[in-house]
Image 1 (cartoon, rainbow, N blue to C red):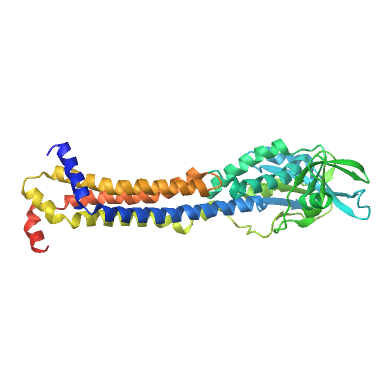
Image 2: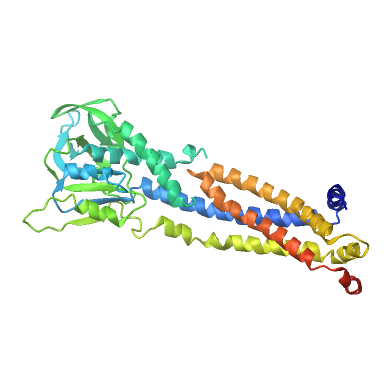
Length: 390
């Protein structure tokens, strides 16, 4: 048989229903879509968990209980593989607005790096919202890409020409960016508004004003560093900003938001996810489908060999038939998974899609390999036995 005859015979078998292609197509489609979708959904959940932690400052640590060198603290973000944002702060004299003379507003002096860190919370929260999703190999890599782009935006918008106030202060006083607040210290321009929700993080800044000061303007009482993924190196770098003094102190590094587990490891969560074994399941389904597709027609195949069809032509024919129903199912699965990953992932959807598409791909590979190997086992000498056991 020439190649054209083999291809036409395979197409006729598909169209006539001899191969039961529709049933095998459904098996492959359901397997790939359900298992692949489950894999994609689990990775998206890990990604969202990582983004939630970043937006809630769970990846931020603070050195407390010691005097801090402001310049050394702000310089931590320049360290190779160090924190993406770092800054120092200290308590300052309260501010009293002229409109509310009997009410004092807690105030803190903060270095430019600390202002960037406050501004990053608002930027990350916006990036993590569903409306901002326009699109790992892991959840941690996707979140890290988002953190990098967020840092670039923060560097451009962290204005230190005036004071920063929390959203609660902004609402109570009716102030926005660019407003002028009359206080007991004179007129103060609002350079920005930062979000500080009550979600387990340090509550001091929930209702406060942050006054930007130079990092070289004396000693500070705490140094904060934001790094993703969280590393033990962060603790060592924070300790390096402490000013050594003769008096003993209770210097420690604490997590800013204590409502999250400090032992969280994004990479470990990804590697140990429940769906990591699903490609093996899809491979087994593909192998079973391929074996069944040959086994149910082994009498036909043995008879074809008896009347003169060559083994090579027969293997090519059954491989083409499997390629049609398994290939179409795989393409349909990939389209569905691509749409899901693009829609549901906040960032790095391609990494999630690559991880999920392994499942329909392994099912396809299993079906093709099983069909070929099962076809090799069919011999003309088995015709009589197959005829008797039909």
